[in-house]
Image 1 (cartoon, one colour):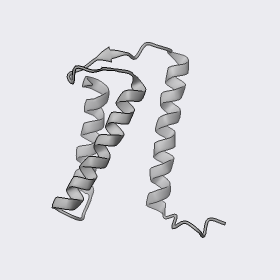
Image 2 (tube, one colour):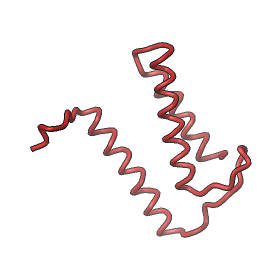
Image 3 (cartoon, helix red, strand yellow):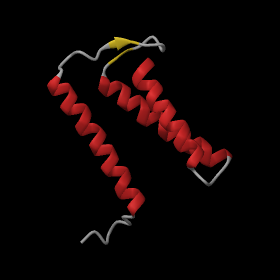
Image 4 (cartoon, helix red, strand yellow):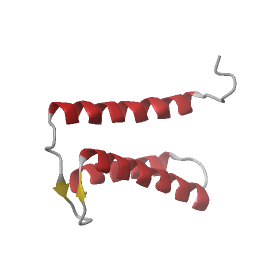
Length: 92
């Protein structure tokens, strides 16, 4: 059925994680509407969705830069990306 696309477990887990994060953000926003806007260290006024977008975008750049400069394995950029995501949600 999905033979036209090379689905692997890492690819599937990536999309499951992405849609789960968006679902959690949506649920929290429905439960507590409009309470997440704040001004962070970057000088931007951001919401939960903005912080999720910034953390995902930053993670993509971290992994691409790591692959360019160092190559495999990818455990170190995973740790850096988790720290970046925590920083985005706490300080941005």
